[in-house]
Length: 202
Image (cartoon, rainbow, N blue to C red):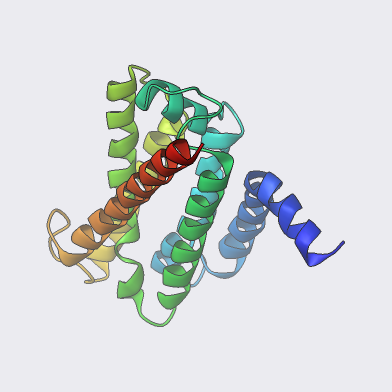
């Protein structure tokens, strides 16, 4: 298989690849990191936990893109603003960002302290989307609130115990997590502009 064909295959199956990678990483981290450093384990788990969250969004029940197009943007669910190309690049960007900051936390634990706040803000984004789209249990909602939020709260408690943060409700890492959500919103704006330009050229 050539590199080009492999990339095409990966682009079509990235969510399933994420499931396999998430399972491998979870086992690896539980066996090798958890017994030695609970806080570092909690931070390194953000990448596999986000990958597992994507099962909810894109595999079962899935159809997050169609939900966004139909219920949020009021467009055709299959040909609207959010397409498979945009979904791929946005999620791969999140994979890379979580991986980089998680690994950075190995040498400087503070570099990963924003991630639990991102998880909490992202859960609220799903809640807001559910309200706007009049579909409370939208793709990603269940895993965001049942997995991400409890994990984030536990991580914030661990950060407090380690002395990384003194006020869990207001600190610089909370603001960094908020900027992460702003990045997601900005990506949505880029998608909207891209869609309108495409509509004008057709």
